[in-house]
Image 1 (cartoon, rainbow over the protein chains, first blue to last red):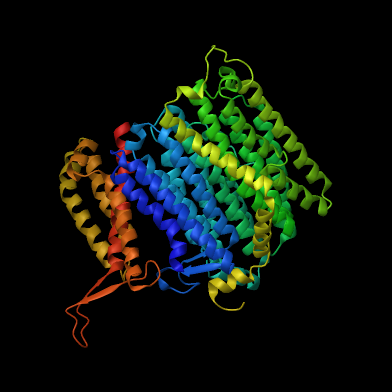
Image 2: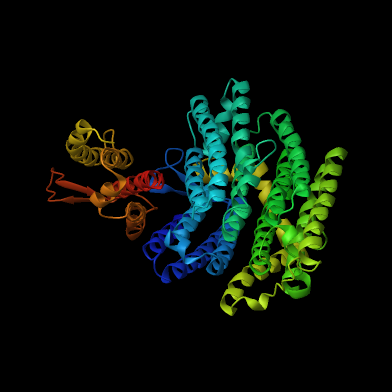
Length: 499
Length: 139
């Protein structure tokens, strides 16, 4: 059983080592593809085990919890690992056509695999300090990917990215230190029990807010999001797609995990702050997107606005709210990565991501136009796509609590999302190309066309499947939310005793 | 930097730092030390060499690409953790081999923990030097 939990971390790490050794050789990229396929298989196997047992845990090095590092997978952790593997596979296939040999020689695939290992590690760990370590590994590898190739623009974005994330890391580490000082443990299941015996609950709330700030930077919450639009449009498209899909969501995941398992002692205070942050994040993100004129910049701002929805689900702290948050998390990763892939293809055939300088995609690349509509409408929440159900559940959760204002804002933000999607449509797809170019998919060589389009088609299919058959996914999210709100299973599985 | 004192002292110090880094690595199992700090000390030796001479000379002295050293280190550490798979124990469980052991006498203990630490040493050593070379060479 324990190997099921280690595999999603170990496979990408070993793949990274192999891919680095073969980086001067075409074999390197195929090693990367094979490794990611293996990761997907391993994560599905793990998911099967989780579906059977509810929560599974493994003690690393045979040191019993709470003394050693525990890996845990509940419904939420398992589905995040599966989605990481899916996004990773799409990115690796896409990068076959997009990443030039020059970057492969610098170790692109190795960095990408290390990033995946770190993301999986963050989703699986049951130890707060270990989570910090995975955050660091993630930061280092993502910084490497961001500046790989070293153009001036990339370095500019990279420095902003790394500086702000270091601030978040310091905040996180200080929070961990204080929490350890107060409770004497860092195992999350053990913390769940230990925080209840802390006398100074005020100090605990302070620590909770430190974690909120630390994860808020990672998740790009208002007002700490400005590193994201400053950096996400600079690297190669494959890189910004996996960043857009996964990185901020690790912050959201960490927030959901800590604020359900550990910091649920003063929900009225912490989750109230979170609620207003979520609302402001939704609004500023979507307004920022409306002001932008670049394909990828618009999408970057939309990440921020969508993060607001997920945090809203957590802040409501009702079963239905958490169902919405989990459903949104999964739906968003697929849709967002896909939109970045589409932006990349548009750049490839039309020559730019600047909306003023491209056009004619609808007339000459109708397939791409159709494949853009699926994730774009899903993002805005059109029925029957996945985004509709995600928004529906969240708005329903807000209405159940009679939070009319919050529900109204989230609906208005959905409307504004459609506005900026139509802006992309109206500039990149509908009018003729300003330079008279004919952006045809057929001009891309067959092999590369396949590598570019397969991930887009695959992810669009997934969006449609979730949208048309939401029942099993919602049920899954319901079980997941129940596990988050009642941590008994989690704690007993990790510690092996009744709390 | 053209300082005679520094260049002369560096020749001695680099060797000392490298030996000391191995000492810190081996000492780490039960006492303060270990792969991480050992790797840092070892990297310090080469960083001193870069400061005293040049990045190009330090690269020539290192002979291998530091990034490869780091990746080999990650691989060694992961494989050390995998050793426990063969005896059906969880990942990273320490495996021990007691050479020349007699009753009442432990002999020479060898462990997968040390192999893991060596991997960490290489990963830190290579990783830090990759960063420092990148900073030194682009300016």
